[in-house]
Length: 514
Length: 112
Image 1 (cartoon, rainbow over the protein chains, first blue to last red):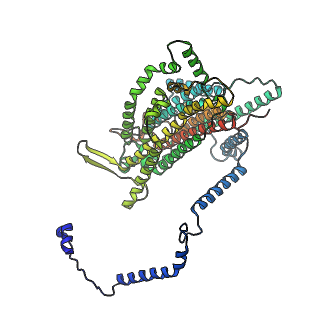
Image 2: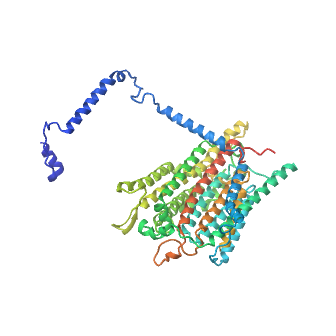
Image 3: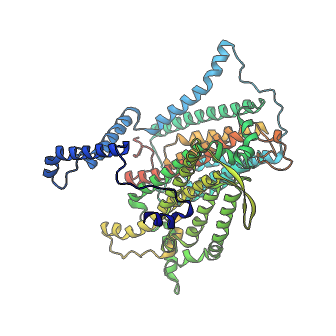
């Protein structure tokens, strides 16, 4: 009877199996007997303890309480970090940073001073390599770069927006330099990161206090402040000069061929990609990239956690001055309702940005797919995708997007990290170390022969995590403008104001970034 | 070219260091960004300057004229990490501003 059933399932390949009731004293039978005896023995030995236990007791783990262990671990961790902070932290950041920078400069200068004293080794001179002839446009580019850097430093105190614009412009100069010096991957990434950073900083600017020039009359205080500025400026000039001289000395020496040659010769045969930089990132140095995206994920979660408890300072709660001016203008004119100005002035850009969403998405996919062979890759693609969402926030305001969009960035982060780790762990099944990658040229039905690499899966993890992390930060920051608008009436009630605060209109958030 | 780039790195790092030592949080963030640019260019310059030799294998590409890909991938990692650092600093700035009511790096206005 058993045989007919097995035949129906397994077909002709059914092995010839003999079933008997008694096989004799085989080892398997003896082991079963031992297991049963042990079970009975345990039952008899523990019968009283088990019968008397209350329903909340756990057998064996009686004394160990999961929650208490967790709390103890957390408490000791907090205690340890508090101790570390007490020993190594300072209350004043400026002297600490001054010491750090001075120590770094001194450590950098030490070997050359030592050489100068003992007259051993080669002193810090220009190397023998010939200089590349200077291109005038490169010179002009860097003249602008210098102006932007100095301008950003000069304006950072009283003119934050201008300073931010100058910093971004300096970033663009850096980006152009990357293009010039044969680093297209860096240029793409720098440009995209620049966009996101600028938007994030703009979102944050709204919560900073207004700063106007303090008219300090006390001469002693002013002298001391000027002395401190002079001291910092001197240190900054020393550090800058040191960096410049070191960079020049290194660039005029012939390039030492270290491990780079390995990467160049093995990128195609070992990593299956034409873009050597990308192959290094997702294949040869994949562990590094895994750590990098983990850092990004942790930062995004920290941003999210910190901003959940964010309480803005009292004086920046409510509409900004620009919003109040716009609202007053709207109220003064008949036929306009409050919030119209904020809605109207972005009318055409809004439609353009709205339509750009699928195009930017397509571009992100393009960057992702070409990454292994051309400049691009998972990180650049993820940031591009995040920019697509940023554009929607800019065009429509936080409220509009949040009503219509469910991105679930936490899941993107988790999935991305999981995919990257799983791709790495996958190589274990083939008996290879963690993160070994494989590549193959596969014949696909429609596309023809397509080169596939397991590193692409890893890159997909990077892509998903970067989208999630960037959007989580963006949402957390952008959401604050709504929260504060909700808080505004309460704050005014507390202050005893009787005027009914205008409820924030959807479009008003568009100005929230200013 | 080398001299121009070295001077550029020098100015960027000088501006960055000066800002990092300032008392206002926003100045410190801008300073960190400028310092990042300087350091990234510095790392890239360690592979010596190559023009027109992007390390992308293609038909007829001369491998001996390639720019060193290793500093580039290091800088790529560095760009990402500095991006996360900026975001983290920004939020710490905002949280400190909300908690202490000031944007001084020490959480309170300097005593005169």
